[in-house]
Image (cartoon, rainbow, N blue to C red; front, top):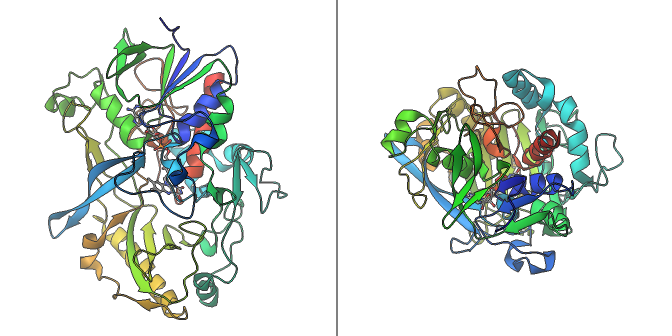
Length: 478
Ligand SMILES: Cc1cc2nc3c(=O)[nH]c(=O)nc-3n(C[C@H](O)[C@H](O)[C@H](O)COP(=O)(O)OP(=O)(O)OC[C@H]3O[C@@H](n4cnc5c(N)ncnc54)[C@H](O)[C@@H]3O)c2cc1C
């Protein structure tokens, strides 16, 4: 029989790789990581299809993806369906993502700190962590940057980018470094990216694989966890399809969809919903009740002489709550897209179980654009994007931007679902975990992934997830 690990990490994704690497740095501490998807032991064994950051490896048949049906919103009362995609592989969604690596602005972190009643998650408290994560190849000398962290960061945008030129000509300020503490809420600038040359630099390759040499860290792939083992007021381990594995403590890093789903399948969630799915409640908790995401609407245009991008999004225009994304990918031959994403939507969505069977995906309903303020913010953003396009030489809109009533029908998603197991105090009826990721109500279970973020983030979540995992691992080390 294998000895019981001190810590069992569920999911070797963006957060899980950081948590496992940091906890196993103590040689006396045994860490076991169970990952649902494929894994490998050295960088040379990584599937070549995952590496090049210029393409998103999202072929529906790819063995490293998991898909989930979702309803983004309603158009004339009819659901707008979409398929969510997640990386199910070493590195998780970070192994298949766009490599955009921007820290959240201080205002988001102030709202987060207010939500949990402590400065733990303020910009000032997180600044050393963000610096320690990165090796910034452009601005490493700046005091707010790092040069010896695991994640290489650089900005591949070309200086003659036509979108940037149009935005500057329209009067938007230039922002050379979105990760600077004084970066404005509005402006245009190159996207800092987690890039090792032209390759995606995810936490699988940059944190977990370098730590795997030690005897106290074990990684098992193709091992989906199906539920938690709850005994005598504590989480004592996990169940897989074939075995029960006990551990001193468990850290869920399965991502915002699967961490919530695992809690629900284990009887931790809203009791009525659990009973309706045929599950006996173990602990009442608002799991899946307040999910956030970044709804997006695209403007397609034809342009001549498109230069291939180094990443999907090389430059970005921020409009304080709306992100305008001039993608550097072709969506069809000769067709490019500007995405207009709502970063702080007024409404939230829900995730709940359809059935107890782990093979049945959960119900995910986003409820996007239900608020008039959100529709107005998107319309403003679309108007600005269309105006900038008209100033870009050789660019021609494929269709006029939709009017307010037509917005829901053309909704898409940024793939950033968050907040399904929110952080907050014991008296916060939206909270599932405390401010260091520990489950309210049962011992020995932590959650350390995007599911616990309690406020909308005005930027893509990847950089924040890495920092979050660093901070929770530090708290767990004591
Ligand atoms: C296509 C795409 C593009 C994106 N682009 C960007 C971008 O450019 N910039 C940005 O900031 N954000 C981007 N994001 C979002 C960002 O990558 C994610 O929010 C972030 O990686 C989430 O980290 P996580 O640790 O919470 O989850 P993940 O990285 O998704 O990790 C979860 C891991 O847990 C594993 N797992 C799940 N269930 C189980 C189970 N039951 N048992 C065992 N293991 C399990 C999964 O296989 C996976 O490896 C993108 C997301 C997607 C999907």
